[in-house]
Length: 225
Ligand SMILES: O=C[C@H](O)[C@H](O)[C@H](O)COP(=O)(O)O
Image (cartoon, rainbow, N blue to C red; front, side, top):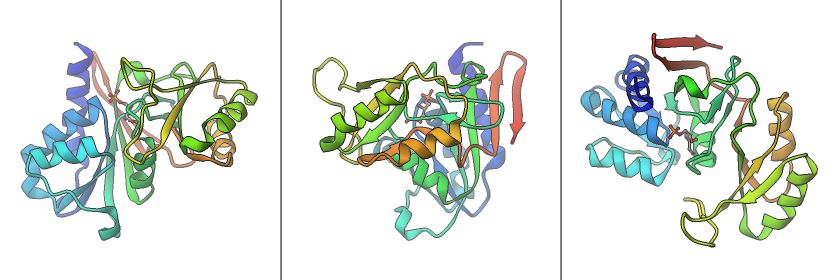
């Protein structure tokens, strides 16, 4: 099976976690896009969605699915999203698609977090994927020095094909930190959160996934944490 077929399989399996009549939180990225396309086939069963990025909101609306502002919603039944890396305890690195801050916010008000990922995302120790950190542009250099002091190699994410900083939906910039071996994800998440100028770190450990639907050549495996 190709990686896309594995992503499609987990996206389809995630439909079983959608709660009828409720609001669903929707993630960002290629796996989440497959999920949005599946959700479109049962859109009449849900009340609507909250999106974790402008790109996701546009894709949802393109399918005629209602997208609510989070400020108008008190509870989200389930949040469904991909990951860049996930451990056997449900901690994740996210933000390869630069949506980490809104993803974290939507996940934080959701009753359940269902991660959908192809098998290549399951790792023993996180860090091979450079850790994304969203920062306020004026704090970029100061935060990069602090991240380097933690042992990483921080690099400013650029707009593809340019020398200009990539700008997120929130007006922030992304620093990708390579070279970390993340053996205590919750502690590192807390430590990076405390650096002044950081908007959010792409470590989802304090609030990790509750379930991971993992796409493998033997079928979709369900990991619960
Ligand atoms: O910001 C992006 C998100 O955290 C994605 O969930 C993550 O990058 C995984 O994306 P994909 O499903 O494209 O591998």
